[in-house]
Amino acid sequence: MPTTLEAVVFDVDGTLAETERHGHRVAFNKAFEQQGYPYRWSDELYRELVKTTGGGRRIARYLTEFENFEPDEARAVAEKLHPIKTQLFVDTILAGEVPGRLGVGRFISSIQQAGIRTAVATTGTTSWVHPLVKHLSEEGGFEPFEVVVTGNEVANLKPAPDLFQEALRRLGLQPHQVVMVEDSRNGVRSAMATGGPCLAVRGEYALTEELEGADLIVDSYGDEASPLTVLSNPRELTVGPMLTPELLVELHRRRQEGGYRA
Ligand code: XBP
Ligand code: MG
Image 1 (tube, protein in one colour):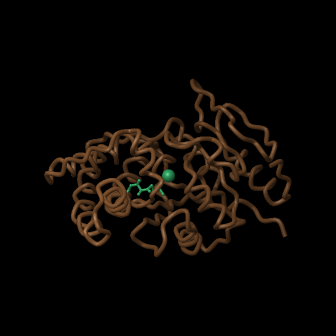
Image 2: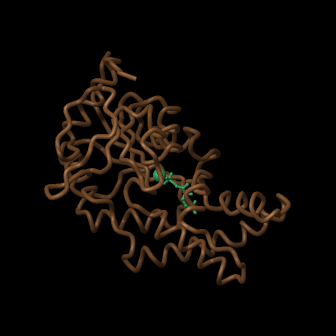
């Protein structure tokens, strides 16, 4: 029995805002400096480290893999540093230094005006996610997300499906009733594990081929001045210069029909 599109569930980092290169990475380096550690994560190194989801786990992985820490010691240092990094990132959000991605406000507003519910499912830490999504809805002119699930609230982070599954539970919906929006390999794999349609808006650290499996891959949400570029279109959708609710409805319908040119 075909179902209609009831909700769109957005990832945060890289999807709603390009937070990694100039946000999280800078906050990690500030925390290292403030606490007297010599570590500084370059953009190139961070491209690799960001494949480990969860900032605390990322620090622990770096210390064991690159600084030869014992696992227990690495975890202890990560547990000390991650809250410091998190507060530094909150400070940048409150200073208004984390803008939404181009066209994201328009897109979410149009979805909400079409009567489609909106939610968030992110690996990120609760204490910065809420101020960021509040800032983005005010900056982007859209209503607050109905449901916001963060990395602290589930057992397994992406690419596991836990975060999307928790968002669906709170929405009272099934995977085939939504579209999940992601930016990274881990995120697309999490959406695929959840079992529903996925739109990928490629993030700054992702390669297009890493996002294969999504039902459509684009480089941006698009707006009047800057049209989006289609990167992969296995459902052979008709895509205009900007993402629209109508396109999401069609992506959702085509997914149910099963046509997929791999
Ligand atoms: C991306 C992540 C997060 C952030 C850092 O989450 O993996 O860990 O990189 O935030 P998503 P924290 O793409 O699912 O939003 O330090 O709070 O983990
Ligand atoms: Mg992401």
